Length: 202
Image (tube, rainbow, N blue to C red):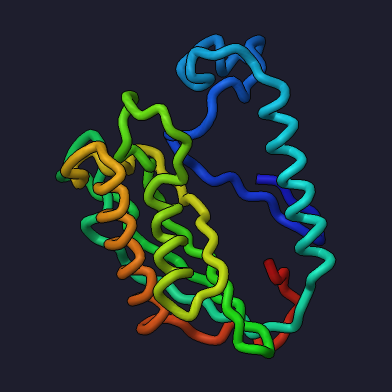
């Protein structure tokens, strides 16, 4: 995570992203070569990611709007467990922040801790995995115009014992289940955090 007084950069998490994004001289990659997908460092991919981040920040800062901010927390049982022991406790809290502008357009940030590991090593497609499915469903089937995922402290939390298959259909199933928990948190636990403030619209 990186921040200053104007912005915070948060890393999302997927096990279905492009390889070659780490410098091969990195001690992390030397110790864990699978992190690069066993591929050589690819500068064009890294540059593209950096440019997209900078463009998103620029767009957000140029489109600030007054909005109402609300915060809520709930629980999402059945999405994940401790990946080593079903009997071990784990963090299943889901946190939600909504931003609603004066025209009624709503953005939502949802925070949940889980390794997105429904798709296994046989998958060769880049995917936003179940968090991407959650955002898609929220934007398609509710009054949310923009849904953003923030990964929590996932540690040993994963879908190892809750997934029924390693398919895109299973990604959709667990994504839909997660979306239900998020909407429940919005309905039951959301409270006013701040009346007014400038927020990024985009």
